[in-house]
Image (cartoon, rainbow, N blue to C red):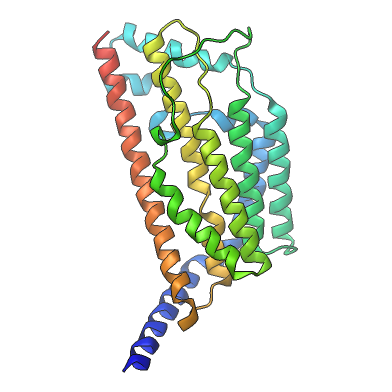
Length: 287
């Protein structure tokens, strides 16, 4: 009876793995081209690393959506536009972009495994973003500090790290070159997430409440970008190297755990974005 149940579980995981490969594997090489594209974009326009995206963008369309008066809208946008005056070290973005391009080319030429290629590219992009954001400072070199306590948990949920660390350590324990490389790279990217979430704020001291809010939006956007790409090497490794079988049930469970935490983190980011917009409405309403 036990053997029959184990055989049934084995078939189930093999079927799940085959379904995963059928839908995802044919597009793996597109990631190699994507790394080249992202790297080129990063090398040519490093400033894209610190721009807010999606619902976090503050522009006149967003101001109209919030129902702000013209005067309040200009106040919000003037504070947001101040960040365009920050000076960053573009060398960081260009070096990271070149490493990303190199990883993509190695993948396109089939010189390295797709999971190793993705790991190189994601590490380069993640740390480029974290270090580039850290390098930002005012052009006049003046510094205005905020007394608010800043902690990474404000922009990334701490339970995200647990399953990702477990998955990374599991791959390291497997002992193959590919699994060790992907596992170590995942840990390095998690460190980049922590670094990006801990970047000190840069303020101008003209509108403290709005400046803190807009800085929080940018910080959330930076971390969201790294989190979005962080699980890609793990997912690609599971597709290319994971083999279904009775001995791989634990890996199947870990893969499902990683996918669950990814979905949970996406939900967290959406809620955090909604909270940012609600906070902006509260701030301007109190003005």
